[in-house]
Amino acid sequence: MGTSHARHAALAITVIGAVLAPASPAFAAEPPTIDLRADVNRDGRVDVTGATDTEGEDSWSPGRGAVFLPNIDDDTKRCAVKGPGGKPLPDAKLAACNDATDAKVNGADDLADLARVRSVPMANVPTDATGALRVVTGGKNTRVFFKRSAGWALVTAKTRLSAAELRSGVELGVESTDVIRDSTVWDGRAVIRLTVTSGGTSTSDDVTLRVAPLLTHHHLQNAQQLLVTRLPGKDDYARRQQAFVKGLAAGVKAAGISKPLVTFDKYQDIWAQDFVEPGYVSMAGPGGRQQVMRVMLRSAQADREAGRELFEKLRGNGVGVVQVSGVRDSEERTLNSMGNLETIPPYSQGGRSFPAGRIIMGERKDNGSKPAQAMRTLLKSQGFQDPLLLDTSWLHVGHVDEFVQFLPADTPRGWKIAIADPDAGLRLLREAKAAGHGGTRMFSVPGNKDMPAPKETISQALASKWLVADNTMAAKRIKANLELLRRETGVTDAEVVRVPALYTRGTEDSERGDSMPRLSRMGAGEAPDAVREYGQQKELARHRDRDGFAAPKTVMTSAYVPGAVNGIVLGRDRYLAPRQWGPVIGGKDIFTTAVNTAYTGAGMKVSYLDDWYTYHLGQGEVHCGTNTLRDASAPWWKP
Image 1 (cartoon, rainbow, N blue to C red):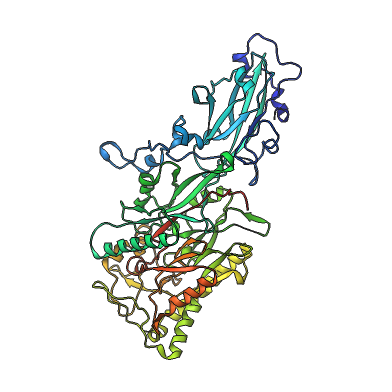
Image 2 (image 1 turned 60 degrees about the vertical axis):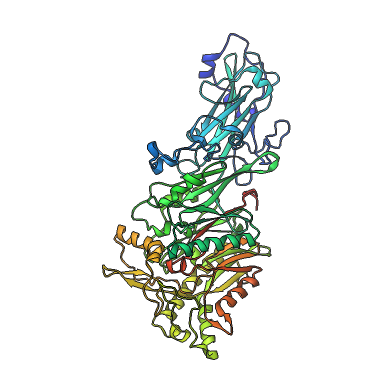
C-alpha cells in the first residue's frame, strides 16, 4: 500500500514529474493512496476491495507471496524448428524462441500464463495525475503488459497511465523471460512500482512477485501420459523394440491411463528417461485452479541429439523446454543422464520442509565425480527441492534409478521407499539350491539367433568367481544410501520395501585392451551388435574416449537379474516392472514370485514388460527406456 512506501512520497520532483508535470495544483494535503496489489494469498484472484492480498505484499515466502510464470512455452507454435532450406537450427537458436522472447501477448492461452497485478481504483486522483510503471528489481528477466480498451500493450519507460485509468484501476500482466538459473545472479524476485505524479510531486507503491520454481515430479502425482522412443525398421532389434512399445501401451491402458503414448521417432535414442526430465511450473489461476506449464528439462549433455526433439516435437501450448549451458568436459556424461535424477515425495524432517518433494542424484564418491555443476546450480536455485546426492560409485551407469524408488502408500507419510536388496536375491538362490534345485538354469529367457540363452545354473552362479562378492558389496553400498535417506527423511524400517535384486561386474575387453562394462552371462557369448549400438555401453565408451577415462579401482556393477525397482509407478496401486526371467521351479519364476510379494505387500499390483533383449542387456530397464508426464494440479507450496 502507499502508506508502506512513504520513502517514495518524500521524493522531490522525479524525472517523470519533470517531463510531464503540468501547471496545476499539487496533491492535496493528504495525497491519494496508491495501492498496487498482486495475488499474495495465491487464491487465483487479486483482491482490490478487501485486505486478503495486503499482508506480505512486499515480501515473499514459500507459503505466501505473489507468483508469476516463466513464459517459456510456445502457445501458437510460432517458433521455427528448422533453418533456411530446412537445415537444422543450432541448439542455442532452438532454445532462443518462446512466448517470452517477443513483446506481445500471443492470444488467450498466452494471456493465461501472465500473473495479474492490479491497482486499487483512486477515486480522488487529480485530473492532471499520470502514472508510470517500472520493474525496479528483476527487470532484466521480467516483462509487464497493461490492459487498455484496444488490448494488452507492453509497459515501457514511455508508458503513461491517465487519471481516468488510475480512477478505474489498472490491470497488469506479468511474465518472466526465463526460469531461475543461478540464485546468486537472480533469485527470481521482481518488484513492480507504480508512481503517480501530480503537480510536480510523486508518490509510489511497490509489490513483490517471485517466479514459480521449476519442479520435478514425484510418484504421488498421478501418471497421465508416457513417453518412449520408437525405432524404425524391420531388423530383429527394431522389431523387439517395437514390441516393447506395444507392450508398454497395453500396460499403460490397463493401468487406466487413457492418453496415448508420446513417441520420439527422430534420433533413435532408446533411453527416453535419460535425455529429459519432465517438470512443471505453476501458479494459482482463476477460481484457484492451478495454471500449469510443463517444462521439459533437457539433460546436461549438449551432444545428445535426442534432446532436440523436445523443442521440435513437444514444445508448444503449455509446454516449454529448458537446457543448461556451461557443462564442463570433465563432468562425467553418464551422471548427467536424467535417469540419475529422481524425486522423493513431499516430507518434513529436522526443521526442513519439502512440500514439492526433494531431488536425489547419484555421484561417484570414490573418485569425486558429480553431475554437472550447471544443472545442480539450476536445481538448487529453485529453492524447493535441494538435491541430495547418493553414492552410485558401485554402478557402471551410476544412476539412482538402478536401486531406489518411491511408492505411494496408505500411511501417514503417504509413501514408502522401495530399495533393491541383493541379500534377498542371494538368499533366493541359496534356498533354491538347498532345496535341490541347484541344477536349474539361472535364467528362463529364451535365446534368439543373435544370442543364445544363458546357460549357467543356480549352482554355477553361486560358485562363480565374483557374483557373491559383488552382491555383498552392492548390499553394503545400498545400505549406506538407505541410511542417508532415512536420516534425511525420517523414514522408518517399516516404511522400506525390500525388493530382491542381483548385480554383476560383467566386463568385456575392447580392442584397445581396456575393459568396458557388459552384462556377462556364462555361455551366452558376446553381446549382439544392436546392444552395442543402442545400449548404455556406447554412452560409457564415449565418456572414456573423450575424457581419457581410466577404470577406477572401485568395483562397478549392473543388474544381473532385470532390476525390478527400475520400473514405472503408473498409479497409486499400479506398478510396471521388467520381466524377471529368473529360475523356474515348480512352474514358477522364483524372482517374479518374490518381487510380487514385495510390491503387493506395499499395496501395489504388479505387471511385467519384457525388456531383456531391448534394454536389460544394454544396462537399463523399463524405467530407463520410458518417461512419464504426471499431474501437477496441486499447489506446490502446500504440504
